[in-house]
Image (cartoon, rainbow, N blue to C red; front, side):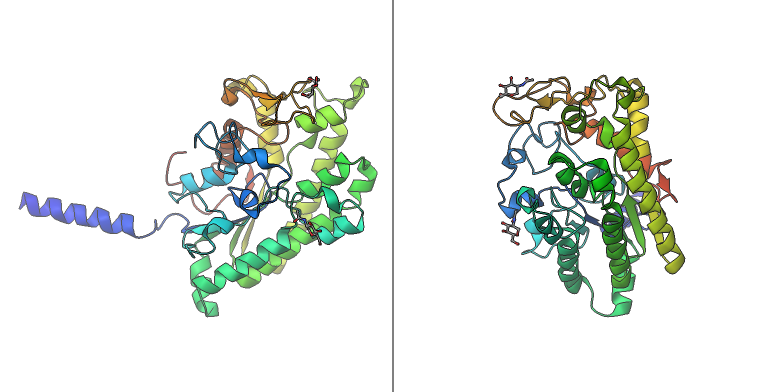
Length: 370
Ligand SMILES: *[C@@H]1O[C@H](CO)[C@@H](O)[C@H](O)[C@H]1NC(C)=O
Ligand SMILES: *[C@@H]1O[C@H](CO)[C@@H](O)[C@H](O)[C@H]1NC(C)=O
């Protein structure tokens, strides 16, 4: 009798673990740029930034470079862990095998929300790392979708347990013009276009069957080592009490406020969906304000780089000759001047998944520790 119970119990557990967790998400579909890319850019063969294909990128968790622009895991990886899902595979790695059942990651490092034509028309196309903008990523999603479900009802059933991460995207649309000397006033004029591109993608995804979407805003650009280095000024009034450049933070906030307005409009239009704003800005700012609480000692100085006050040196970027990585990346918020460390991404992911930085909060609570 005892033995029989045991067998029954084991059988019960097996059937639970074999089927998807009823309390969580079954799949994650992710769109974006280097903040979320888990290996697409590397597989495009573009050579603009090949150092992400070797150590010290990836040194912390994977122990080898994966194409992630960090020492370890990204926010999207922590989302997967939290919901007991496998890491979201880069589209270009799995496209041929068609293994999409737990979702796919379409994010590409360097990607923009606007199509590359926009940047070519502005004469700055040559500096783009990739042409795989948000609309190209949406096209990839449509191909994947055709292998997952066919009828409208079929697709609705499939995607009702999917989480769509739409961004962060748009940061590069601003980085490129800022890095070639665009003024804040000039770049600000692009914000409605960028937000419009994100909003139109959300609308398309809803049309394809998405019901729960997380739309992250921009990080505090003025606290980023690359901005602090390129736009360094002797004017003390340009900095806030945390040493961040006020004007660039205000710019990021402006983008975020426009994005929130667009999201609100979409919520009115599609009341049967859940469009969640993810406050990356607030989550990152909290780490910068109380770094000790997160075990972080260096808030602004990059872990990996080739010298200078913020350890960002454009002639010796992380991974290039002349750069070194710090011994313990978990004590830094910034990894390579542009991207954050795994430690920072983990705290940001916690702030989004457990709250309070998602509005409204996610439907499901995490099912696993992360
Ligand atoms: C993007 O497309 C343009 C032509 O439209 C091409 O010249 C360029 O090489 C492409 N860039 C990349 C990074 O693939
Ligand atoms: C930046 O890197 C170059 C090339 O390695 C080096 O010559 C220069 O001294 C570095 N600048 C700083 C501020 O460390």
